Amino acid sequence: MENAQQWFRSEVLSLPSYVPGGVIEDPAVIKLASNELPFSPLKQVQASVLSTLGDYNSYPDMFGRDLIATLAQHYQWDGGIVLGNGSTALIEKILQAVTTPNGEIVYAWRSFEAYPIAVQAAGGISVQVPLTSKGEHDLTAMARAVTDNTRAILVCSPNNPTGTVISHDEFVEFMNSVPARIPVLLDEAYIDFADESFDPIRSIELLNTYKNLVVLRTFSKAYGLAGLRCGFSLCSQDFAGPLSSIMTPFGVNSVAQIAARSALHAHEYVEKQVQFVCDERERVVKKARELGYAIPSTGSNFFWLTFANETDINAFMSLCEEKKIVVRRFANEGVRLSIGNVEGNNRIIDVLTMHSTNTTHE
Image: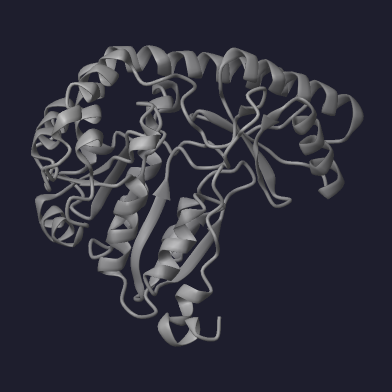
């Protein structure tokens, strides 16, 4: 570490570590920690990838023009589209581009754990605004947190890890309160799981109204392509130009581009898989609430549990280990549980039932 201090900026040396879901070697264990889709890639997608196996000696299209054209048609959007190595890479690049020394980045907390890492790596200062008691963004407080030093705002809907969804009208009111000089990065990685009953943000409708709005989406969740790392941003042409210039050259590989295009063309099958996840989510959450758990309304492919104390959460994690399911613990704040296949979801219900009879939960 002594040598590292002379090589790296101090904010890099003190970065918190991102904690992945982990590698599971026991075939009996079901991983419900990373919000992955519980299906193999669609056959159409697999076929499209296999058909290009002999072409990987050449670089991919650096700008992903075919994929961008497909995205533009799919979303009926004629503005800017920029691809990235997952939506997280786009967030990192945007923050690096807009953050001045000691510039402030406002976001809700708890939210996606990559945010504070990305802010600190960009040389910025995190301004974390606590979630409400219901696990929702406090948009009024976030607007109040804006200062002359604010360089960007991060908004996550559905929010990771609580699953809560910001309504369209709430977001419009918030955008009207944000100065146009401040980019608002709307992270919609899980938006496909939030149906109309949540009145989710109609983000693409708002792009022409708010030139400082940047919508971030990914193929890692609903499209089941997490292993290929492909995300994209929808934004104004004015924003897309400079953003494209700082993206890593050839950052989205050929396989990812081909698979993403194929997945978009198979959207009706994707929707069926999403519906399965949503139906299973409702089944599990309904049972959990019947057992007395207070679970925030979730429009994602996971739900959030909080506990009375450390002893309580330790007991829950022990039961998960006993039932051979891996879930995601956030210190003593709570546990995020991904919706998986029927067997995995039934194991979740078993754990919730066992824990409910033995301990006190919130």
